[in-house]
Length: 456
Image (cartoon, rainbow, N blue to C red):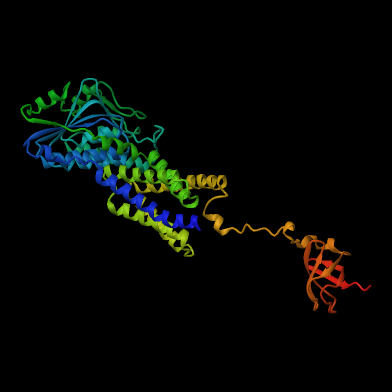
């Protein structure tokens, strides 16, 4: 009874703790508003693009352009040095750059490769540092192998060509940076041609010759001077510590691990009460998952509410059987909350499926290790009717054949006799036998024990 009482009070406390941790993460997340720069006036915002192009970078750049707009910035300089990343994130960042309404210059400080090239092409001007490169924008998978899917390649070629043409650049060069099947004559401009099978990459000097770079500069200061903005106030933005942590937390691998720990931890705490540690780990894992996605700008309160509702329904299902209805609704709500909090719903769905499968193995292991504890013991009958307690199983009744005993109750024709130290339910062939009479077992088949009075 005490264990059930602990479960009944512990489940709401677990749910409340999850809600408090999540809300604390959401309310305590630094948003770094633009109040500090709102009164600067016309300024040049310097924004680094020096990491893998993914949803975390997208969120940071959205904040940067929003702050620049609120501060009435005159210009934004994107300092690019990246080897690329996700195509979908690059597409969204490119749209952000070209639709911001603030003149933007991309300063390629090292490499603007793949998705980095696309971001640079969406800027009004491109300035490159000596020794830097731009291009090599072919679509590759996670291992770096070229993707030969015609539909995917065609889509990315079109995106690159449109970004190049947006600012008067040769769109055929953009296509040559993506598609190895494209050939291009550039001998008269850069001293070499782009051959079939190659992916075009341009150095700073080559990019300037073909109109892909507007200027060559060594530093950001030189870029600003070339733009004629050297007298303007400069505001350098960098990812906040919270954004840096969020970028790590929303990584698909890390997010999947957090979901595994969250699901397994909460489930083990519900099924095997009294530990505390699994529940704490589960709550913290879920809190970190939503914290990262909230800081990155993907999760809203609706996703948190759906998730908490899903956990609540699953807890209720444990104590109030509903033929699975509450469990199904809780699972749907939980999965929906996780999926809509992620930047890519399909990736999130795959992550939660993997997390559920992995969590099941962890839960089964914990259930076997602590099989004598837990909520399932309440539903298992563990009483044993042993021989030591005076009971005999049906499969040993044939051993009674020929033995004598004494009737405890009258046999009319059924009753009870004592044979040795055991009480046996018996019947006669039809005759009545009074109590305290000697009887002998004449037949024992299955559960039937037939006796006959011993006449002396």
